[in-house]
Image (cartoon, rainbow, N blue to C red):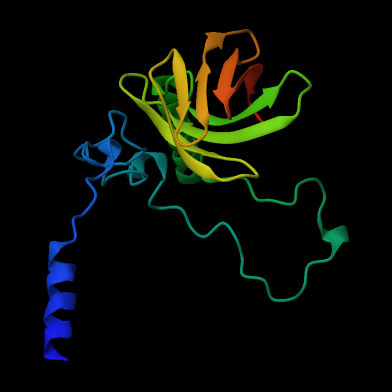
Length: 185
C-alpha cells in the first residue's frame, strides 16, 4: 500500500504545467487616459456659493401625487453633479478616441447574413488585439494583427476594411467562405 502511495506522489510531482498564455505575460500598465478625478477642493469654492448652499431638496413626508409635478420630474442638477457628469463624459470620449478600430463587440456573418461567431475584442490602438469568440459549437481566444483575425480552435479570417465594418474570407472547418465582420445591433 505504501508503494502505491509513493508512486502516486511521484506522479503528482512530475506533472508539468502548461506555459501561460502569451497575453497574460505582459505586466500591468496604468491607462494612458485617467478617469475623471476631481481635486480635493472640488465644489468648495465659497465665492461661487458651493459650500454655503443649503439643502435643495426637502425630505419626503408623504407620497407625491402626479398632479404635484408641473414640468419636470427631477430637480435641476447641482454644479457638482453637472461637473462630475461632464468629467465622466470627457473621460469616456478620450478613452474611445484612444481605442483601435477593432475595439468592441463584433459578429461574423456569412453571405446570407447568418450569424457564425460573436466576438469581443480589446484593441488598444497600438499593439496586439486580443479578445474572445463564441458560437453554437464552442468558444475560444481571438487575436488579430490587423490583417488576419485568428479564432483559436475555429479558424482564421482575412480582414479588409469597408464602410460598415470589415469583410474577408473565413477559413474554418476545411472550407473557405466569404464573410463580413459587423457590429451587432
